[in-house]
Amino acid sequence: MRTGEYRASRTAPSGPPPRAPEPRSAVPSRTPRRRGRRGARVLVLILALVLVYLLGIPLATWPFMPRTDAAPTGQRPPDSPGFVYVLAGSDSREGMSTDEQNKLGTGNDAGRRTDTIMLLYVPPSGRAALISVPRDSYVAIPGHGKNKINAAYSFGGAPLLVQTIEQNTGLHVDGYVEVGFGGFVNVVDAVGGIEMCPPTAIKDRDSNLDIPAGCQQMDGTTALGYVRMRKADPEGDLGRAKRQREMVSALAKKMLSPATVALPWRWWGVNSSTSKALTIGDDTGPAGFFGLGAAALKVGTGQADTLSVPVGNANANTPAGSSVLWDAARSKAFFEAMKRGEGDLKQYA
Image 1 (tube, rainbow, N blue to C red):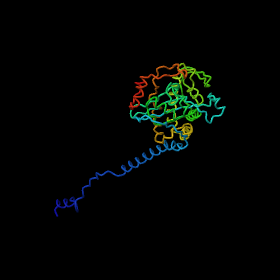
Image 2: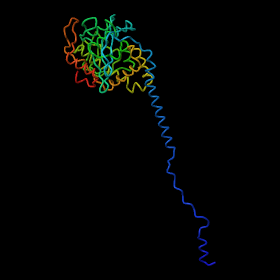
Image 3: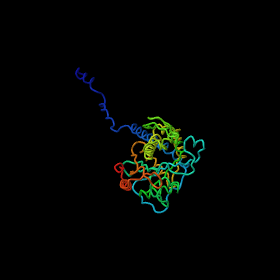
């Protein structure tokens, strides 16, 4: 063999040529997709547990909430867009001892009237509104002539109060909620007190109130005196109504704050106290009550306006004594806007 041929045979490859490397599959691994699905399921489970926690505790206390027949008799105004709830603070001393009445400065009157009357209005869209109805409003009470509106409760309880509101406003009331003196104190204490900021010092013997000016933490007893006090307020009943709206807003904010909701024992305590403190209308079911809670959330988070029925005369001389007269034209426009379901009532207030 020649030298060149020998070298060629040494360098030539033996056997078939090697295979070219196969390209990697373009199909991605299923592992990341499985991880993504697992993460989504975990997230859904967590959200479900949070929802059960937030709604389950109120539902657990729901059966213990007292009921009352608040539906008026006779013809009622037609339903209108949105919802209107009556919030009534009665001077009921039920379940309170004489010592507790003395401590709270409530007296021991046997009659029952409404110290606080508010409308919580939730339109189909736009801002909700918390509306004070001055308790000394001079209105027609069905079957009893004209008198201060808080007398309606004394004459015929919740049904007559609702009927009086409907006939004087033309609004259809969708729900009724009532709280007494003792219940209010317990709810405020359950949330750990409320911060209020009176611009001036207040000293009022009738409500056992003696507080300095400026922001301060109020317990249930002090808060009750603060919302009941009238004689030491230069604005009288209108000033008291303004303080009551401020208190309701602050209470709703505190009840639904993360500091309350995130602590199971506090969230349970608040719901337990609320279920014992509030009395609701027989026709208000769980859905209506949760709707009320959603509206309260709007109030507590500043998504609602706090207003009063337009007033023409805050100190009118009437057969029932010094009374509040609504501004006829402005109040009519105010209630007509509510009947239409408008979401901005400030322009009519």
